[in-house]
Amino acid sequence: MITYQLEPNLSPNEFKDVLVKSTLSERRPIDDSERIKAMVDNANLIITARDNDKLVGVSRSITDFVYCTYLSDLAVDETYQKLGIGKELIRLTKKETPQATLILLAAPAAEHYYPHIGMTKTDVCFLLKDINDLK
Image 1: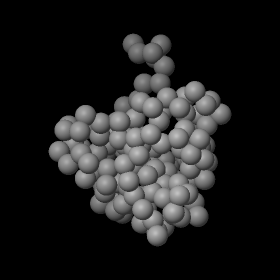
Image 2: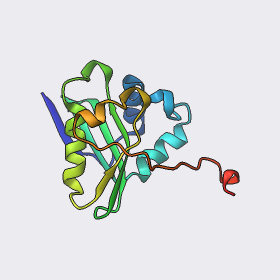
Image 3: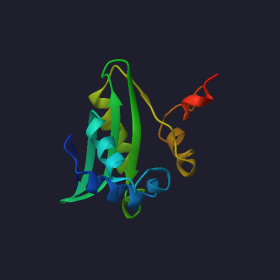
Image 4: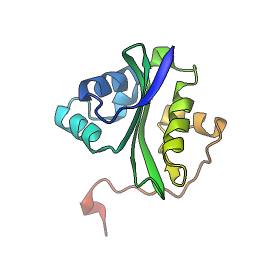
């Protein structure tokens, strides 16, 4: 049975492990333990899914709780995918921040999943990775 809970003190090692098991590690700095630790420490809304004590999913967000919630990482262990865990993590994230708009950047492989569960696709997102690119 999968249980869900707020877990603000999630272990960086467990977080890294679920990133690897979900394939999100391809786009995350998993070889940089300090960044992984900072990612967990600086998130202010972390919801986990566990099968007994085993971490099988995580929703890691940064939010002001009233206007916007950036769901930065939605990771579900591949062996637990297609069981509704990701959708439930999104639902619980939104439930914690009901007034806020939930914002998520989809991994390429998951781009078609989010509209399927009722999220609206938008093409008005902009990224700046390097300050020197700002003109």
